[in-house]
Length: 382
Image (cartoon, rainbow, N blue to C red; front, side, top):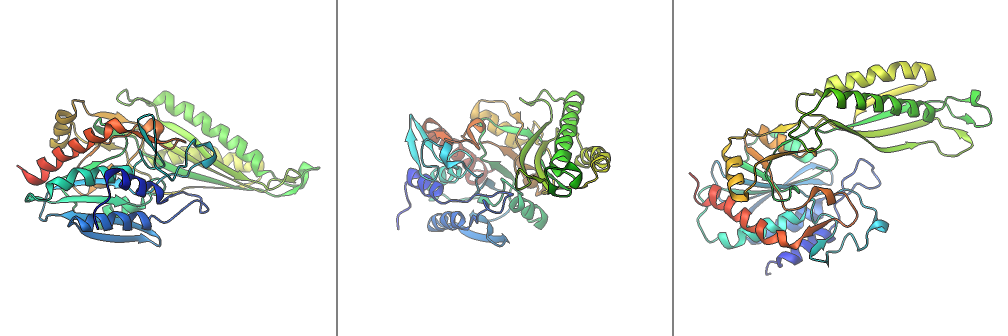
């Protein structure tokens, strides 16, 4: 069966939902996307290994050629949740609008795999002196369990790894860390006509959010790194759930938030500062407060400026390697001995948004760049 065209691969990937989310109602398996990619890559002669990370969650390692060294082209197979009513088009259907391919995952980042396949297809008749590994991970948008499992297994991947996250085709060698945390407050429900009948978890959460905002202001005054376009650490309140009816005192409330530390900020020190604020608050409101990470913290990432991969990417793109505020799986690939860089065709400003898109004029430059990277590391390695 002939391999689908680049556009048809994009369309098939977007039409195959693979949301990962901290909310169970949204969370989905990435298995169908992994099977799609494994089928195409097997037909091209890749050796495909599907790893089960947990029930319904999988990594794909597809290898062409063998031996040590080589190049890893990596991405995540999941997407964030979506608000279908806010999209002008069907989020699960590839639509061309004003020179853009629109669809969930077009930019961040299932479309990257179709571009990798397009790049490697005409090279497969040549002898690969070092291997090319195409890596698709699970749950990057939530727990990063796929990349963490690879790092924990400790099996070497390759000499260099390029992660195709949306960077506008500019190389990225630094990014912030990612902490996703949860606060659960347990109070006492009661009839709303008499506040003495209960202890409001919502009132306590309101004060807890105030304390977090104060810490955010403090950290943003203390820490700054001008290499980042957002030079301070950030703290985002992502979702809140509590109560069930206007005429009942709220007995339980939970908050999930996202904290992005700069290199040099230690997650445990940040958590200790938060706990110090929450303890007296719990006593004042006579509630119990449980504070814990949703997932292990993602470390900040920095690849040294004079690394071979950084110098090569700067030469091929014409851009000096930069820093970004968002987090990626890069630290985990570094732990496996890869020189690592983040470099992909999309724009982060449209990721996680209704109408996510990839400009069609980025398609062929990305394919050409990927071919040059494969040539350097796999066909004519030094």
